[in-house]
Image (cartoon, rainbow, N blue to C red):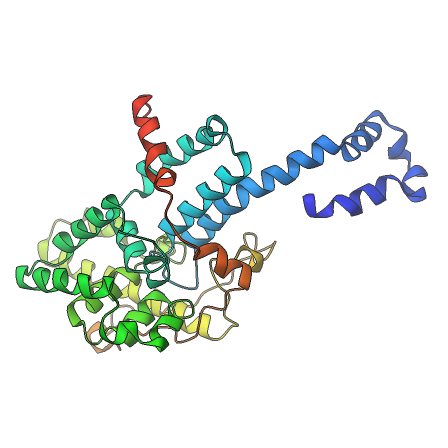
Length: 338
């Protein structure tokens, strides 16, 4: 609405509006007063500035284009950073932060998001000094949880230090430039060959999705899976669910490659009717004859992130304000709301 300010004000001051019967009603007069009120438009602009970063996070989480696990943590940081910059006074921006922190811990505060942030080279190398201890701790939680082999855990721990110092191919000028252009999983797949354990772990994390937006509930028999008591039938249905889910992900990749690539993080690329129109997707009919063992392994989208200059600067200018992530959450805990 803020973008339509000039058009709306032009409309209610035009001769056509003056000749319209609605302009003579009390509602029409009230609308004229509102559209002519400077305070109203200032409030609209402020609301837009405060909510756009939050909408960006929702865009990241619900992205139908790319795995978003490497961007959610950074998106949350940027949202709180914007709110702090706009409101300035701590008592004002903390009111918003407390709500965000409450929802974050309740729904999204998972080690995977911190690990995705840590393994995203665009974010990792933009931090001055040491990584915050909370992020590092959650990164280690993921290693211990997802890597059962103790020897591999030890190797990853060694390779983490090499990652910090950008040793080997990670420090090439080509790799440095690619931090801002390649998707995180592609970056590791391309330049992490000298660190096989770390690269494998990173790709596994960074390829995770954050939403089931592409998975139709009536296409995956979860209810049927939980109702059966026969162990063999349960195993067969588990395989079936696995295959159906991965087939849908694969079809999503094929469909996305047929259309122009749109950066999932850029709010400017959002269609105003996107949430109202959905396409009918095709799924394989012969589910029983699907040979899941013969499926090709998943592949990555080789296209680059086409960020605008403003978007790139906004997402990669540093993450050095520890208050943004952790002080607000502490205040919520002290108030007894969590």
